[in-house]
Length: 467
Ligand code: 2HG
Ligand code: ZN
Image (cartoon, rainbow, N blue to C red; front, side, top):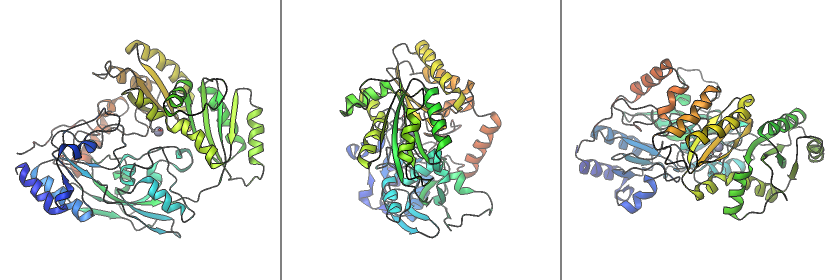
């Protein structure tokens, strides 16, 4: 089918104004915000209902034109960015939030609802989503499900797949699967919900999500602890976890990352003098100890490896400390396009990884400036390498770092996914048996390769664009 016929068909399904082809309006959908991933889509299509999504998928499949679902476009691995000639299926208009079931503790949300919208709805009922990260105002619930996103609350409440009870999705043939009974025990056949979570748009288009809400604990305080090394940060975390049950989030960043945030965001420095590394954590009121704040102050003061502490309780002060961590991504991007890697190491390999990383980077990209930060409780390090994009043109820098990660028993993709960025490196930590099973799943659910071809798995054959 010629492209003009497909566009006419798509206009009939979603209405003229929701098939976008003029370059200025297409631009925000065609590139990710790091500016590393971009393509020239045939069109951006914005359906408003699951029936429209299904009809769009059918029309694209009939025309042999691949499509890529897109949520808030906050992904970092090119999974939701179009390649040339693809249709972008924007989920933005499927943004309903609710209903919320307070008894079963679930919240329905359309794929295009933002995380912040879902959080507000849950909090208005005294509950919470149990997921949080800095892109909350833009990242969508569908994107979170499709990428199995992580973030800051994972140590307590798990990654997205633990926070999702059910979902609705359109498969490559346009059929709709809906698993949203809300029943938390359901062993009826293969778990398609869990299969679709983290499939990055390659197995189906997630149109709605049923979130599994948590009962939040009150946060007693937030601590920023200055230490010398990642090992010291782990020692502090371990000591706090020994004495308190409710550690909600544990993050780390280095001096150079903090420096970038302070410069770019014009924020006040947290301590009079610089320190090599910072541990940031929230303490929740699980134990119901009335003096928890004072007890934590005392505990931290008694630890030899602690060089300085800032412990705060008010919402404004807590926000101020969290900004030092959450704004690292933007501060790095303001410096230039980084090589971005998202890895996880066993905790006992974390300090060795940091040491070896410095050597490896010096060897392969002499001018690179590594900025490391992340979610320390899961050993999840966001490796941002500034001044390394050129040296990484053929993947040499990425390969060197990911080889190191694999040799230390880590994960080459902790929470950002595979997308286009990491597909080449999958065999580093996935056996040929793994790869064959994944390919078989893709082949069974999307035999024509219509959904996000080339993401996740290297693409064996791509359907030709018939125009
Ligand atoms: C975060 O934890 C995000 O802030 C982004 O996962 C990480 O920019 C990054 O590398
Ligand atoms: Zn992260």
